[in-house]
Amino acid sequence: MLRTIALVTALALSGLGVGAGEIQLGLAAKYPGDVGVERDPAVMFHDDFETGEPWSKWTKKRYQQFIHVEEDPKIVRGRRSVRMVCTKGKRSGMNIKWMFPEPRDEVYMRHYARYGPDFGYLHHGGSSFQGFVKGRPHPGGGAGICPNGDKYFWSTFEPDGRWGKYKPPGNFIFYTYWWKMKIGWRNKYWGNHFTPTTQINPRTEKWICLEWRVKVNAPGQPDGELDCWANGVKCGEFREINWRRGADVRINSVALSHYMEEKDYKPEWGNTRTLWYDDVIVATKYIGPLVMERPKAKEAPAAVLIEPKITEHEAKRAIEEKEAGRLFNMARQAERMGQRDVGRKLYQQIVEKFPKTEIAERARAKLE
Image 1 (cartoon, one colour):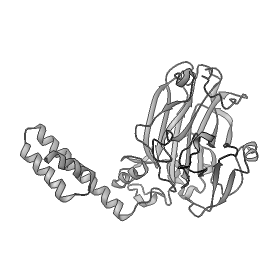
Image 2 (cartoon, one colour):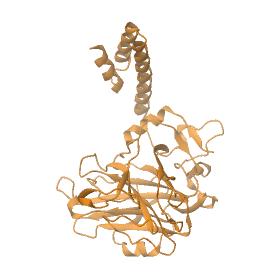
Image 3 (cartoon, helix red, strand yellow):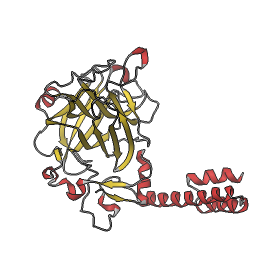
Image 4 (cartoon, helix red, strand yellow):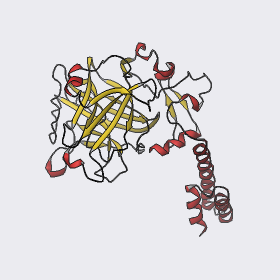
């Protein structure tokens, strides 16, 4: 059963593009600092980039000049993280992949990501899952082609900048190929988007904890599932997905990737894109954010979370926004009941007590 923290500080997540909600702690809460988490029966894979290289060896060797495990002064925990850099005019795609010993029908993946100050637009890249017939890894690419439901499906949880429409690095989506996908631009099957109901738009140079869950469907039936969380707050839930029609198509691997094309480089966006990944866990249960100390049975203080880190000022603003919102809802209720004078007094109270909040602007509009 998940421990949850219903805190006002969750409102501060809005600065990372995540709305207010409950922070869910998962199995990681039993292992402060993730120490020993790899021994949990639900954990299939763990890498904090401190020691060893458990990823599939060929991916590391193929892209070793672009992927660097390094000492990191802005680390989430420990001393090292992995850095990936795309540079104009050089190889633009890279990934590190882990192949499952045995295929699965339901998987969770958690990782931390940080986007460099040079981020202007990311073509593709993030954490991904692949489902395919055992022994036949999907061929990669396949852009513009709808997969066969008896062969493979895949999806990448990634920021989508829409060529500059959204603030870098972009809003997160699941970029997805599966046999029931819809045809798109120029009559081809480009990756369809599963877009979270709550926008996830991280700040550059700040770590964010990202997690997703995928569950395959009964062959040919629309009962597959997909979920995502950011900093422990659930941001998206997708149901009735027909991932596959063949029973042999199951989840076989996960990856971290980074990919650019020449058209993604413009003078105002710069010639490089740098990102970091850290603290990766793949499991059969919800994982949740890193914690530094085990939460108590009856209380879970905000301090146990590594991210997000908020200032005293941000906490105060979050409290003010919540109180202003409560008064605003009371005022609207009074208006619906015909008590207009009561409503105006409440709007005035918001403007006087919380003048710098977003709710105050809405209250002023009601008073005009």
